[in-house]
Image 1 (cartoon, rainbow, N blue to C red):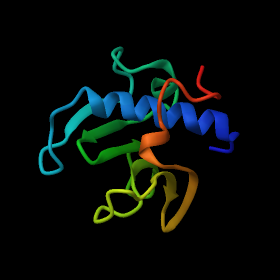
Image 2 (tube, one colour):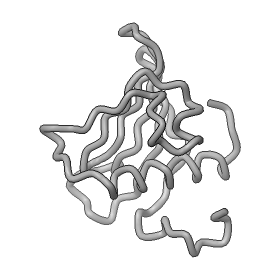
Image 3 (cartoon, rainbow, N blue to C red):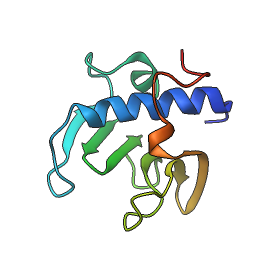
Length: 114
């Protein structure tokens, strides 16, 4: 996932939209197949195997193996309500934060939103 910050912002916004439509808890996440027609195109285009959605974040699995690629959208610190949310990628034991923003700043009114 080597994209610009505008792309990552759109992925994060799509993840937030998905979270806002779920009432599932962390203990009981909603599982969606990656090709589900209800997903917005930017998430469907990730070619995910499965997407787990809870009130605390989204975990996207790409590939069927244990060493597959993953994408996570969740708070950087669950104990700090003001902590920024992070979009991270991971493969095996390599994790990388590709986008980070304060949750309150995510809105359709921000200048770069399209």
